[in-house]
Image (cartoon, rainbow, N blue to C red; front, side):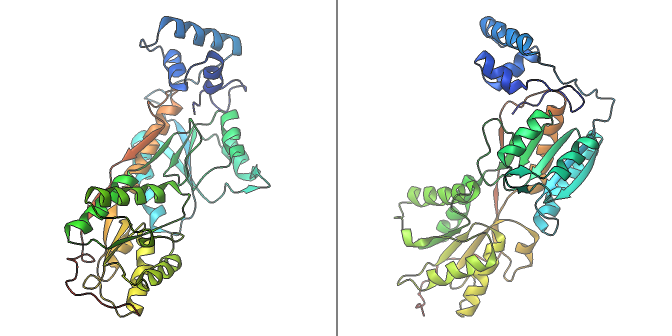
Length: 353
């Protein structure tokens, strides 16, 4: 979503409004505003007329010799290692850009569908130049408020598909699901289960799609009973694991869609006196510090949290300078980190309880 102008500029149309008026995309309107040459003459004329007709005011570019000012970082919680990785990435990139960071935790909840006024008012009062959100999602009313006040923002790893035009940075979740499953297949496992988070969350569905793709490429038939959903916490994964273990033909390996959930899998396996990886191999996702502390150390898919946060900050700086990213979605690669929780498929099977 284009964010031109600043909070001190009188209210006026956004670049998205200009684009709709001219019948073009926001990136095309941004090219005209920024004087790019790769725009057809007729398209340029329509956009230019819409700019004048609507009274669009372009946000001044931030000069390289000046400090852009303050940027807000809003996270769900400050108590998790996840948030620590995000903070680390933002802090480093902000230092390089000469920015100061204001951190808020969970202050954008809505009441009755309305943005929480206290935080939003403080945002404009302190003159923040932009916002980074590391939250599950924002309410439409919050998008509207930020747009009306011409405050650019970037979502870091949103779990739901953002509205059209909203800039976000995430990880290649489908690739990660593929890598995790291919690793288990390479060890001789064919009875591979997966435990996802919430069904409607984009990250969970993408990881499970990668799992299905790897099985299909290996010619392994799909077993619906091997696909389970938890709620991205230990308790949900614990319950789903017990269900899998009670199947007539339980899996020999489990791909779990978060490291936190993998700890719940470990607990369930210990209760059934099963060994990792001798009886069942386990792969997690995220590569949080907890994955190294687990016993045995967890094989997992690394999601580059700090790099994602730093990338989001750099994109935000460009938007504060009046630029529009070429794409609204940026994905960073994931990779497999092999540790001790995976091994060859057992030649003899154990019996469910």
